[in-house]
Image (cartoon, rainbow, N blue to C red; front, top):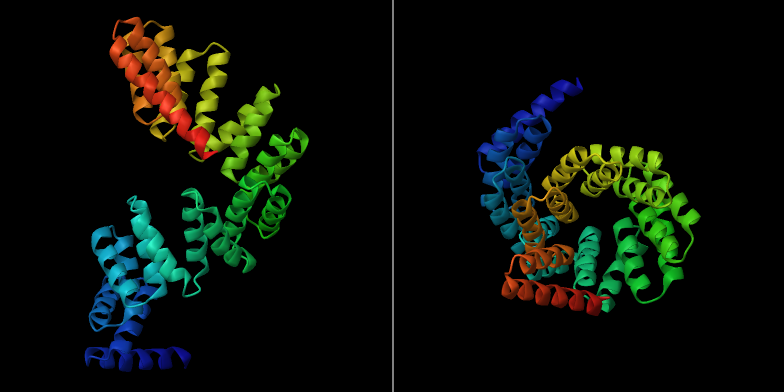
Length: 347
């Protein structure tokens, strides 16, 4: 009987939608999506969105994004955002952030945050923190953290730590761990390392690693590597590398080179570089230089330098000076000094 009633209800819903009822169109879109018919769902959501239904605008944008039509998806997120739809604002902000338009992202995260959207409060706080506006960041992050949003707890802890309030920072990170967010184990582990408590750091990293958190796995491997537990470190690095972590791949290359296997080292460095590791580029340069392939070494160092990597700049400048290109070498040394000064100023 329930199945017959559902079919009966859908029949009249479709009739109402075909007759121009916008609410019925939106409901048909939802029904088709739940049934696994995205093309028909998109058709109904589009009709409802064009009829002014702001929730359907966002739902349509989701479907468009899922099938790769990002430009049109962003246009509908924008329409939904202008109509005051909370999730449309949030997703429009995410789209702007992906494209590096941070000011626009901050604006729309702010609009969504003012409607009470917790993920947007957390995202706005994170952007403000990254841009050095700690006071305003704290206000938004604290609201989201107190409402139980763990990402905000972690970022609030970072704001507090940078201000020297390490005890309160640790309390928020522990709260995030207790709520199930293992990313906070990395913050607690790093703080323990800074305070000279490696056993506490190891405990936090192990908790995160055993829960499958990739950064914690890599950090645990690095801690073990530094103290000479190379075999266990390598096992953890391999685990993280299988999850695509470029830092773990780079460190596997370091281990391979330390045992004299430059072929394996190069393979790991190349894989790490493909996954975005800048230190891997510099390490490939050092390998090429070691085998006296100076042209390849300069190319790798240049690739690293062009990303803003100081070690890449310094290594490139050294090679340029050695082959007589003193003017370009000085330019890279000056650029490296500028980057270092900017980073020191930020910290």
